[in-house]
Image (cartoon, rainbow, N blue to C red; front, side):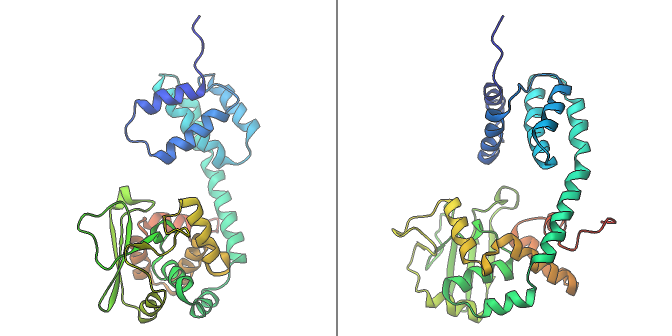
Length: 282
């Protein structure tokens, strides 16, 4: 009797059969496969029972199920009960999201408080928080190289260039670049331009880097930006404050602009960043 393949082996075969899986997804699924204490080709009822015993959080259950269902389909195993179970988790996931939004809303400072603190900042601290609060950028977007002139052949990098009376951000490497392509953002704000001049950035250097000037790994870069953000709130919470303010003002035109500058969808903004979205009718 042939030896039963391990979860890791089954996942590897599935990944090798596909050419459209991102590296992050591979890492996530590999971590799941390596840590599940049961074989993904066991009975559906056993899998459901094991997941319920192992995890309380419906998000975690759903994430595990995503991998399990894909591998089982690849092996032509039944998935109907697992898909039904995953669908049943959606209400619990929405409930948790709304509870977190309510908690966030009660603990976040107001937009006016944050903007007052922005005005007190200088140099790189001002630049980073301005990009968070005015353009809704994520951390990865702000991993910028200062250049005097944009290169003809762009690499998978994000560039910042000062052109006469404006600053241009040319963003090519960000969370959703595969879906939205390169982003160009023009900034004409006088204060931003002044603070950029004051940091005296050198041509072809990262505005935030290692001591030797090399590019930081994303995890280290994220940590650096968290520490630079106002009150160490981080980009996601600052974006929630911004969206709440714009919704209060009914400034949907600005929210549409943020859809483009952030590289996301209106649906994602309303579901994941709208701290008013905590009522049952929503």
